[in-house]
View 1: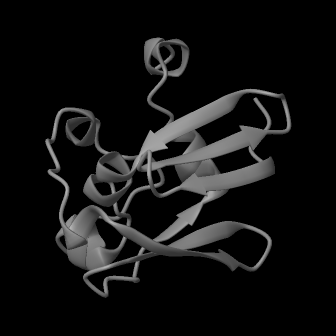
View 2: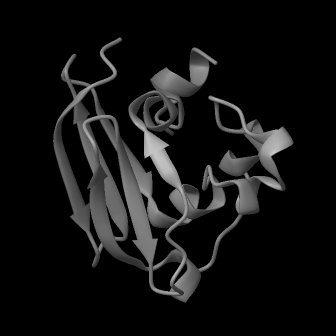
View 3: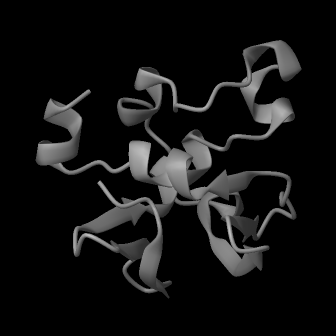
Length: 113
């Protein structure tokens, strides 16, 4: 598994972020999943809950369309991560490559967890 992306596209009309990884696997993330899995301390409930892997519950957490789940911008954070900026102003989550790859919602990746 290669945890470095070779392509990233955000499609606001389809409400998805697609990441193609170095091993040519493409992860397609619904905006609601990305917001539900926000890795910041505020969304995780404090620094003591910070982990390198997303919580399994995020895959079942419904996130309706709202300013909270409308992606405003995607910002590169160094060469190791993305910061997602949401329409409600939230921009604290830094989604590093390992975390994003572990968050892949496809059946193949979920079966490996």
